[in-house]
Length: 322
Image 1 (cartoon, one colour):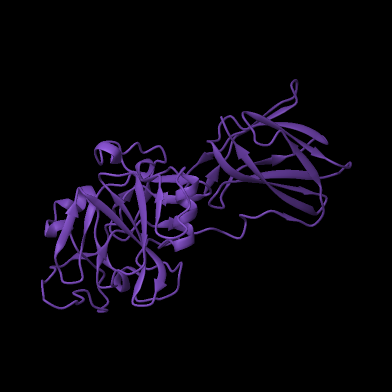
Image 2 (image 1 turned 60 degrees about the vertical axis):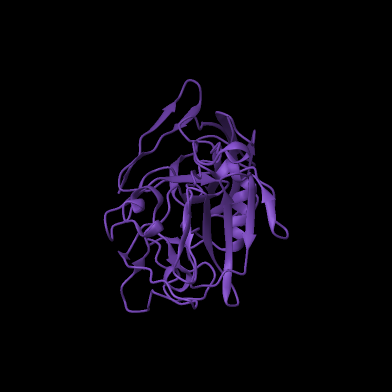
């Protein structure tokens, strides 16, 4: 249920779009996983909403060492996880490690929900690349790229690999579990699964504590235990569409205020502003063909503004930058 307050200044002719939310998730809010009560901070990077913490869902199991590559997680109806270095106290600060099939809930479809909370999914390889570029890193065309420090939590890494966390991704080096059951790398590296399979492996991304690089790998066996950051599902509302070109919006990008200019007279018109995860964050009627709308209460990011006028609808992308 949403309760919205809209104020119209009849003297200045400006709509102030305000949205008082209840039981509504907006990126940047805390995500509550209703399955176990755990909470995750979230962050908008580009137009995608990411968890700021590693997934930590499931029942902790023991990793058994062996001279052959093997799975210790099985498709038994119980979601299983490893604690980094086999120590459950590390789950609180670094989240869990998962073998790829278990993380995917035994699906092989890129973008599957896997064991992420409802409405979220295991990121695909292209989604990870898009996030890296949106965070200010370089596109990884072969193996390596740069910008890893922007993804690391402040205080994570050292020397040339010291984290700046300008992206808000807040990575911590949880290490990994190799396919023989041995744990490595706590505080020295972070490795994140994607949901994009690559034969006996799946693509994954590594951040190292001593360097700014981002390594894209595709050869680690699926028996390996890596971290996961879930990403929010997109909705069909997140696109530009037009039954006819109804309006112009300027300026765009927007700092504080923009104007909606409807091209022809109307008898009934309204607008909605939709955030990057498909939720309406502001809406109201339009009184004039040329109306100023204040967006001071909205955070920086990508939104869509949808105008409905006499049964005709146009939706356009807008960017708020301050």
